[in-house]
Length: 211
Ligand code: B12
Picture (cartoon, rainbow, N blue to C red):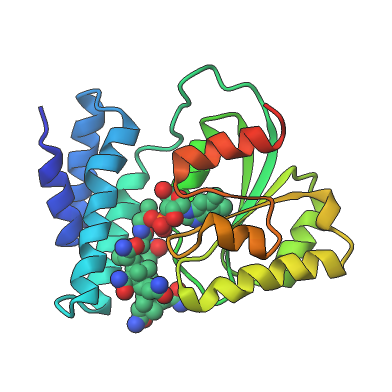
C-alpha cells in the first residue's frame, strides 16, 4: 500500500515524475481521488506556501511544486460524486485578470464534472470583458470566479460590476472562491455564493440551482 506522506514529499520537493508515478500507484491501490488530494497533494502545496512565506522557498520552488501537482492531476479527472450525478447544467469558470493560479480552479472543475456539471474552463488571467463575452454567448447557469492573490480580489468585484453594466447579471449565478476570499466578502461584492473548497463548491452549486 502506498504511503501518501511520500506523495506529499514529492510535491514539496517538486518532483513531477515521482508525483505522477506515486499518484498512479495510489489510484491502482484504490485510494479514492479525494483522499489523494486531501492527504497528499493539497497539504504538499500548503507546506510549499508556508516555506515560501518563511523565505526558505522562492518562485522557482513554487513553480516546480505547482507543476508536480498538475502532473498528478492529469491522472485523477474527474472526481466522481457520492451519489449518481444527474446532469445539472453548464458552468463556466476562470481565474481573474492578473492571476495565473489554476490548480485550485482545476480541482473545483474535476469535482463539478464528477457531480453532473458540463464545465467550460475559461483559463487564467481572464478579463472582465472575456467573462462577459462567455456569459453572453453560452447558456451557463453558473459563473465561477477564482482569485488566489489578495491583489487580484478587486478584479472579482470588477467582473461582477461588468456583468451588471452589460445587462448580464440576471442571466447567471456567480460563485466566487480562492484562498484569500470569504463568504462575507462574497456577499459584500454582490456574488450569489462562496465556497471554500472543491467539495463545497459542488454542494453550493447544486443548492444554487435548487438541486
Ligand atoms: C503553487 C503556487 C503558485 C504557482 C501556481 C501554479 C498553478 N498552476 O496554479 C505559481 C508559481 C505560478 C505561483 C505564482 C505566484 N504566487 Co503563488 N502560490 C502557490 C501556492 C504554493 C499553492 C496554491 C494552490 O494551488 N493551492 C492549492 C489549491 C487546492 O488551493 P486553492 O487554490 O486555494 O483552491 C481551493 C479553494 O480556494 C477553492 N477555490 C479556488 N478557486 C475557486 C473558484 C471557485 C468558483 C470556487 C467556488 C472555489 C474555488 O477550491 C479549491 C480546491 O479546494 C500558494 C500557497 C498556498 N498555501 O495556497 C502560493 C500563493 C497563493 N502565491 C502567492 C504569491 C505571492 C505568488 C506570486 C505573486 C509570487 C511572485 N513573487 O511572483 C506569483 C503570482 C503570479 C500571478 N500573477 O498569479 C501567495 C499569495 C499571497 C496573497 N494572499 O496575495 C501565496 C499564498 C504564497 C504565500 N504564502 O505567500 N504560485
